[in-house]
Amino acid sequence: MSKSTGGFGFGRKPGTVTVIEQRVLRTTARNARMAFIITALIVGVLAMTVASDHMHPILAALLAAPIAFVAGAFVWTLVRIWPVLRLIWWWLPEITAGMALVYGWIALANATPALVTAAIVAPLVGIPAAVPALRRRVTALGWCFIVRHRLRVCFSQFLIANKSGSLPLILWARPTPVGERVWVYLRPGLSLSRLQGRLDEIAVTCHASSVLVELASDNKKAAFVRFDIKRREVLTATVNSPLVGVIDTENMPPAYTTATDVPTALDLPDVPAESPLATAAKSATSPNGKKASKAAPAADTFDDDPWD
Image (tube, rainbow, N blue to C red; front, side, top):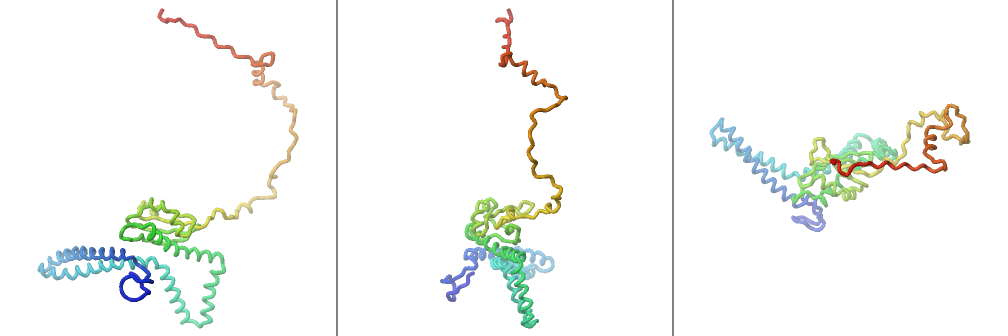
């Protein structure tokens, strides 16, 4: 599905903006036909089987035919418009915010005079822009909207899952102290190990410093993953400790003590003049001040032939 700005008619022309890829449309059309045939056969057989208990088999077949057609058409429509539904899901936060802004402004303008409308709108816009805490919160929510689309760019450019071009389902995102956290349900063709090998490229696309990805569910479902996108470092910030007001600074001991003279002679009557270690050291020393050499152990004597 494409929107052309260069003229009318079919086919791609200069100035065409592609909304849904052609290979996705072809794959969806093929899947829709198969879904219609399978659903119509199953529903038709079941309806004819149930109706044949209450009427003639021919009448049961005539009754089951429209039921099978309606069920098959419903499934065909659902599969055929799935790319459009997925596109709406990708832009659902922006669509909801835009509709709320437009209809809210119209309702407010119709219900109040112009001065009252301006007096109500000015604080709603000015306070979040002037208060740093609110401004950071609004910015964090804006990055949650942006990062969903940046991840979609990653999946469409260098993390292509399969030949049909079906992209993973990007579920929701919420802000964290260091960035954003996004939950994604992968399609066949992608795995956690493959994503972990392209984290540097994902970080560049998301305008982040680093990206982490891991399993999101406790039951270890491999298709349900979580992206942790890091944009700032919070551990380097200065944190005020509450212990500063608890410590009594007046009665604290000094941080250091002044050096005193080391005594050279001690009068310790309880300590013998010569300790046992000193006595043993003297006994091991020869009269001329040299250490006495140890006597060599006597060699064991034994007969050459013990059986003699």
